[in-house]
Length: 108
Image 1 (cartoon, helix red, strand yellow):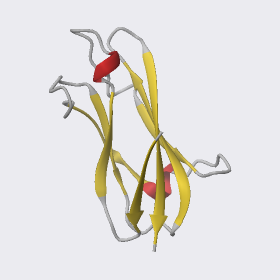
Image 2 (image 1 turned 45 degrees about the horizontal axis):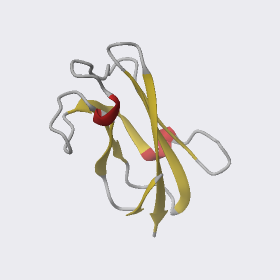
Image 3 (image 1 turned 90 degrees about the vertical axis):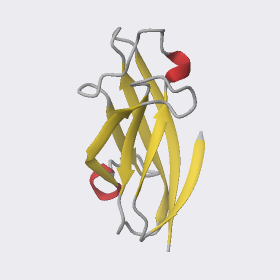
Image 4 (image 1 turned 60 degrees about the horizontal axis):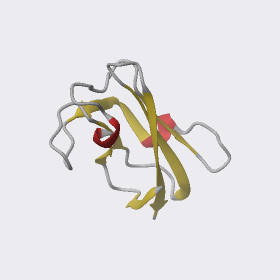
């Protein structure tokens, strides 16, 4: 699982790249893909740490494949804590489902 740290003040986008598992013409579907955050106890903290309106399907930085990565913005103002698990759950144009988890710790 990829890990990163952020300061309470910081706001920036993070993404999960699914290009390695997509077929040649397969893409991610924004409407049915989700991103959620949970704390170490499993409680949903998405509203506190993620800007849900920012969810987007983007071009893969690694492979330049269009519609192959799922992106969301992490919010400022969350209390220093963690780790939080951010779950990128992608649904593809062929109906396949893939998940990438990222660990985030917020520091003061």
